[in-house]
Length: 258
Length: 261
Image (cartoon, rainbow over all chains, first blue to last red; front, side, top):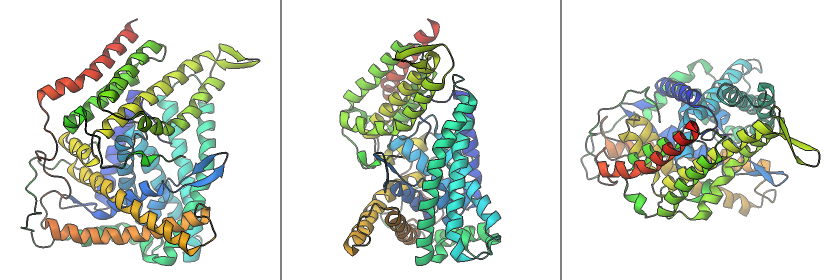
């Protein structure tokens, strides 16, 4: 879930903002998302994909429906660094344009929905992929398992945030049990959908599943090379679409995304 | 676990007095208002009544339909569940509400505060979002010194949402025409559709990269946004700042009254 406005005290929110800004800055640099002060196009499309993907819902009974969260999926497809930047974009758009999740909690939501699950997914895949012999037919269930565990980790991170910055009216154990329990359901849904989606992508375009590529050690370098390749500039445009210089100097990468 | 992102397509806006305010003014006013609301102690219901009056007044000025506001409130369902946890499992003293059923009094107070803050927050953001296009909002962020690359990324994603939404509709139609297992809203069908959609999206990113390289040429110049002084959105004046600070100042006054009393 997204933490709304006013749920967590301000010091915790500010700490979340600082952590998110630093994490997204490091992720952007690692993935070479910014090339010559310009952002590459893949993260924007993946972020939009996550937003649209959440519109496709599956009924789960009791009048409720489930949808994908997608951090684990994005991590498997494009690597943890790009995934973190994508989720940050999604969280900002959801908070400011769709009123989903608090504006003052943007940083915390980036940490809980982006940093924690992306790193958890990458860690699980990296750990277990060699154990199943790096066989591609075993990758989709592994990706599902990793994203399910990641969703659980994200839920526990949210519980930790509420313990640190929420109220002391209920015991910490109750907070962790409630959020953890709810996220068990979320994790199962996430695992099932991610398995199916990754299996489909592996069948159609196996090269698009970054973490399933044979040279797992070359992941980051690979991403960087791709990013540079797509952003390699052509001749300077001089037509009517060429836009003038920005007036403001480019800000440093690790500034707050708020 | 609900989806109501479709209430208003990103990139559209209602023409209203709020439209003429510069986006960075709206963003700062919004955050200031929300911080004041967040700091208000839940033991002061009348302070929240004041906050609600302020935000509803702005909603009326901004001509936001009540239906839009109501559909956004579905995002509060998980908050409702947690608030219920506070009321049910909060510490003593407990009050009896129905035959034998007792709830925690401090838990009820906290639950009220959490729900009130979340509701006011959703309405406040919806009011600003309804009067501002996504691109304008991002331009506001850029003028507030959020890194240019991140603003570009958010703006580019906002545009791609509409493109991918149309693509998703085509994928869905194709699946329905093929007949498939019958219903598109089964686990398997949703997973297959989303897998197909990602492959389409990746192809889209490659085309986009080519067009960006052709269009903007060298390493300088913005990718998406016009430069900070661009003519497309209003420029902040001191009068705008003064007008926009009124809701936040009213909220701060209510907060102060609530804390001092």
